[in-house]
Amino acid sequence: MPDRFGNNFGDTSVLTFLYENESGLNKGNGFIEFNLNQLPSNAKLKRAILKLFINTNDSIFRNIPLSEIFQSHGWSARAVIQPWDEHISMYGNEPLTSGALKIQFPANDSSFSCSIDVTPIIAKELERPANYYGFIIVPPYDQKKYMFNYCSSDHPDQSLHPELIIDYE
Image: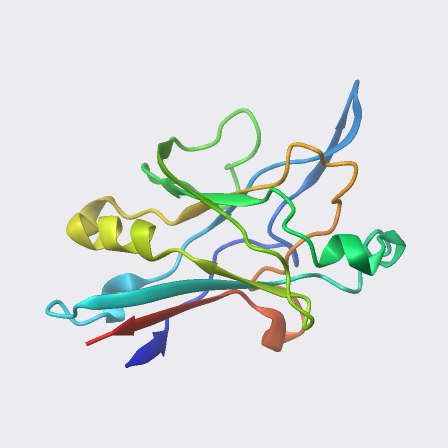
């Protein structure tokens, strides 16, 4: 039975933040965590999908050709392996992450969303629930080409909040 779990943490309407350095405007990593405590302890995981929605209100998004939006674009997700706080987790003091499982995002669909199969990460997290601290969302290396952003749970349109959809028996 599929269920939707919790919200991510953060106080901006998008998952990743912009910063400027000597190379120009860049996008930092984003963090997202869902409450898995609602999942029954005897549940057998079948599939877990992280669904993210592009912030289409962003002026940068409107300047990207649709053909590029619908391609696979280099975003990825990994497990966070230590506690973090939404107000201090920024470039330079980010929590540790696991390199064991790196999930590449598929292409965005026509609804400007991306459904990422995170089953391997959630399965690992369910094996050691005391060590679950969510996901790090990593933007593509070629950030100049793909400057669009995904919405967070603080986006004013609740229908665009991230979702973790878990199918279990």
